[in-house]
Amino acid sequence: MKVPPGVTPHDFSEALNRFADVVGKEWVLTSDEDVNPYRDSYSPFWHEDEEPVPSAAVAPSSVEQVQQVLRIASRYKIPLWTISTGKNLGYGGSAPLQSGNVVLDLKRMDRIIEVSDKNHYALVEPGVSYFDLYCYIQERKLKVWIDPADPGWGSVLGNACDRGGGRTPMRDHFAAVCGMEVVLANGDIVRTGMGALPGSKTWQQYKYGFGPSVDGIFSQSNYGVITKMGIWLYPEPEAHMVGTVSVPKHDDLIPLVDAVAYLMNSGIVHGQTRFSTPLFGGAEEDPALAALRANPGSATTEEWERYVAQKNLGYWSVELSFYGPAKVVAAQWEFAREKFSGIAGVTFQEGKTYRFPLDPKELEQIFDPVPMGVPSLSIFGIGGPRSQGHLWFSPIIPMSGEAVFEATKVFADAYKDLGLPVVAGGQTFFGPASAYPRCLLILFGFPIEHDIEKNRKNRATFKRLVQIAAEHGWGEYRTHTGFMQTVSNVYSYNNYALRRCQEALKDALDPNGILAPGKCGIWPKRLRQSKTPKA
Ligand SMILES: Cc1cc2nc3c(=O)[nH]c(=O)nc-3n(C[C@H](O)[C@H](O)[C@H](O)COP(=O)(O)OP(=O)(O)OC[C@H]3O[C@@H](n4cnc5c(N)ncnc54)[C@H](O)[C@@H]3O)c2cc1C
Image 1: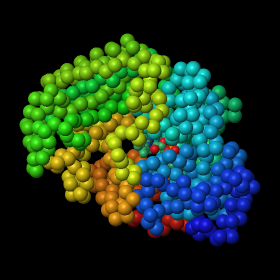
Image 2: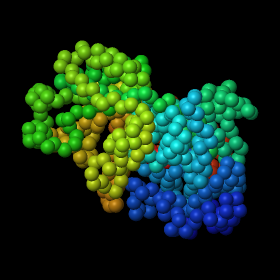
Image 3: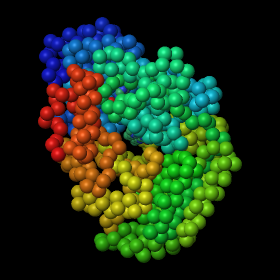
Image 4: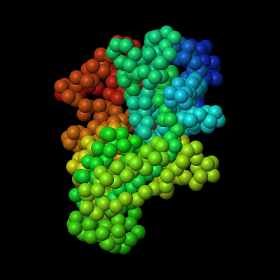
C-alpha cells in the first residue's frame, strides 16, 4: 500500500482505522482495485513514476463525517485531495497533485436541499451532478434552467468551485455562486455571506453578508472543503435563438469583436459567443481551399478574401445567443444587426427560434442541447476518433480583434516552432470564445497518449506555451494539476505578493497543511521552501 509523503505506515494505518470508525469500513478504500479509478485517466504522466497516484480514498456521507475526517487528518497530518464527482478531465481528473494524498470523495453527499423557481436558485451538496439537478427540476416541472458544463456528469458544486463555465446566460459558474458551507481543516463549519446569520432568509439571495467577503478564497483553493453551495439558476426563458453574423474581409474582425463586446457588456447578447473562420483549422474538403492551404508560405490575405467571396462564405463569423421572451429576442437580434451594419458586406443568418418547454421529441433531435440548459455527454462524440485524452491549455485574452490577431499569430508561430499541428500553409485559428464576461478564452486541447516520450515532449511544450502567453500578458484561467506550479509562477507581480498573501491564508486556515498540498501553487509551510521561486 502507498503511504502519504512524510507519514509513517503506522500512523497511516491508525488514521485509516479512525476514518473507518467515522464513515464505515466499506467507505475507506485502499485496494489497488478500488483506488485505481481515482487515477487521472487523462494523465500526462501515464505509466511514469511521476504520475500522482492516491494512497487511499475516504467517502463521508454527511458534513459531520467530513468534520471528523478532517480532525483525524489534522491529527495524523494526512494530506487529503477533495473531489465532488471527480470528473475534472483535462485538468487532473480525480487524482491529487501529489502522490500518496488520500482522496476525500464527496459524491455520497448528493442531496438537493432546495430549488426555487420563484427566485431562481438551488442549494446543493457536492455529489449532485448536472444530470441529477436537471432530473429533479424536470420531475417537479419547475421553471428554471441549470447551466451545465459540456460533460453533464460533472458536479454543480465541484465545477463552480474550479471556476468552470457553461454556455447559457449563467455560464460564469463561480459568479453564480451565492452562499457556501465550508468545513475548515480544524473541523469548524463556516457559512459564507448571509449564511452566517442564524435563521437567515436570504442565504441564496444576497451574496455578500457583512464584512469582508471570503467566498472567493475557497475557489481553486486548498483552504477548506465545501459541503454546500447556493447557485443561481436562470428562469426558464420563453425562447432561444442563435443568429450568425459573418463578415467578408480579414480586417473586419476588429469591428466585429468590438460590436460583440458592446452587445455583451450591455446585456443584449447573453450566451457564450464563439468566433470562427472556415479557412484555418478543421479538415478541408474543397480542393480550392486545400490548394491555398498547401501554399508553403501561406496564401496572401487577398487570396483568402477572394476565396471566401467566391464561395459566399464569411472570412470571420460569430454566433450570437439570445434568450428571453420571443419579442425581446427578436428585438435584440434586430438591434444587434443594426450594430454590425457599418461593416461593408456583413451578412446575417437567423437560426431557429426554440420555445420552452421543449417538446421531448424536439429535444431528442438536438445533438448539442447544452446551450438550452440540458446536460449531455454529446461533447465526447464530437471530433471523431480521439487520442487517449487531452490537456486543456486555456489562456484568457482581451475581448478585442487586435488581441485575437496577436494571439493567433503568437500561438500559430509557437505551434510551428514547437512542432504542434498547424494547418498546411502555416495558418491556424483557435476559436476564441466569451466563456467569461469582458474577455475571451482560448482553449487548446493537447493530446495525451499512452506513449511516455510523446507525453514528455507535450509537457515541455505546454510549459513553454505558458511562458509565451505570460510574455504577452495572457494567463491561464485554470490548469491541470501537473502544471499548477508552472502557471502559478507567472502570476509574479511584486515579488509574488499575491502568492505570499495566499500562503499567509494557508498557514492561518490549515496550519498542518492537510488540504490539497500544492494546489494552484500554494504549499503548506513545511513543503514550501523549494517551491516558491524568487523573483
Ligand atoms: C471533452 C471535455 C469537455 C469539457 N467541457 C467543459 C466545460 O464546458 N466547462 C467546464 O467548466 N469544464 C469542462 N471540462 C472539464 C471538466 O470535465 C468539468 O469542469 C467537470 O465538471 C469537472 O469535474 P467535477 O465537476 O466532477 O469536479 P471535481 O473533479 O469534483 O472538482 C473540480 C475541482 O474542484 C475541487 N473540488 C471539488 N469539490 C470540492 C469541494 N467540495 N471543496 C473544495 N474543493 C473541491 C477539486 O479538487 C478539483 O480541483 C471538460 C472536459 C472534457 C474532457
